[in-house]
Amino acid sequence: MELILTRPRALYYAEIEALMEIAFPPEERRPVETQRQKALTEADFRVYALTDGGCFVGLLTCWTLPGFVYVEHFAMLPCERGRGLGRKALQALFAAVSGPVVLEVEPPADELTSRRVDFYRRSGFVLWTDNAYLQPPYRKGDSPFPLCLMVHGALDSGRDFPRVRRLIHTRVYGQEDALVSY
Image (cartoon, rainbow, N blue to C red; front, side):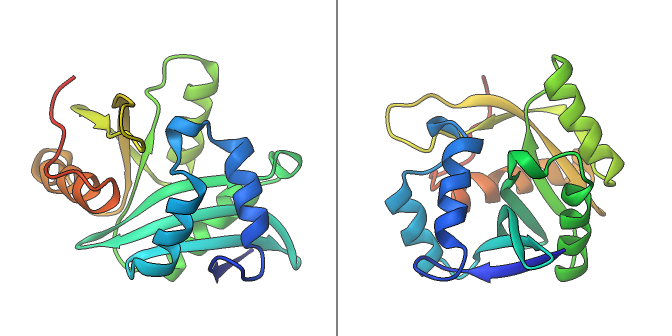
């Protein structure tokens, strides 16, 4: 498994945009032009093509923030799921970055969301359930929605949650401050 850093108009970027369209509904991603602009101008934002044997199999976008890496989007091609490639992609990410890794997940409320949380747990993530977390909207007029944070590495939910939430909300989502209540 390889993580290949890419940019708009570069190798694999068109495949990444196509997968983003099918893997995430509009409210869970930026408009295409905004995403391209971030990929070109934000020094802390990375867009990776995931390849296996030289073939595109998925995408991972992340932000290098003070004290942790935040995975914003992670998806495998539907035809590649169930082959262990997602686990390999996360292992490659852990080897490539230093420090803890944080991501957002839907609360485990049904079979699909529970399976997703279990996948991340098997990869070494811990679900932070002690803290109410809202994902800010990507588009003006959309509403925030409740998610949970999962963490791989040495962060403590009691001590680190307010700082982690504030950094994600302000740097990634462009909020003036963290959203703190439902």
